Amino acid sequence: MNVKGLFSLKHHKDETSRYIAFFVRILLVYIIWFSFRELMEKSSWLRPLWDDLHFFFSKYYILMARPFLEMLIEAPLYVNTSNIFLPGGAQPLYVAPHCVGIAPMAIMSLVFWWNILPLKRRLRFWIYAMCTIVFLNWFRITTLGYMLHAGWKQFFYFSHSYTYILMIYGALFWVMLAFYKPYFDHPSLENPEQ
Image (spheres, rainbow, N blue to C red):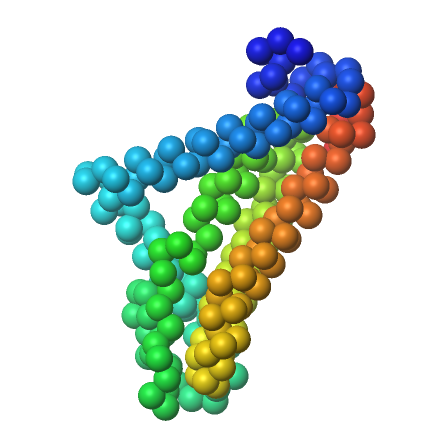
């Protein structure tokens, strides 16, 4: 395999070279994402835009979670762009910038848009991935708010740190496997099925 073939997903006849090219592509996606994120976080003139993007998502996740959380706890909630204030003296739920799904959205967007599979397939799976991320983050915020309200701190911390992260990335892994199935099933990708 030559250097050009290492970065391309096309014209791989043997399975080993296809897997190597696939993993190199995924590694490059993570390098691109990490570099972009570092630039946005470290740049004094880009940082305000980066923070605004996080607050935008945070605000809408909170607005989506609020009615369901009010139904679960049977009480009105007060919210702002990054907090849900729970009744009864419970600790407020802070929706942190790293909890709004920008990283998986960016990574999955790069994975789906930077490859050789048909455009219709890429668009369909990109929509599946974005809907999965939004739904699971909404579910995460809603259930974490309920756990805080109920006083289940041990479940809150375990779920926040492990369960939901595994759930989100696990679901996205399955979406990605389904997306790349034609790539690994066809020896040549000149005309992969949709």
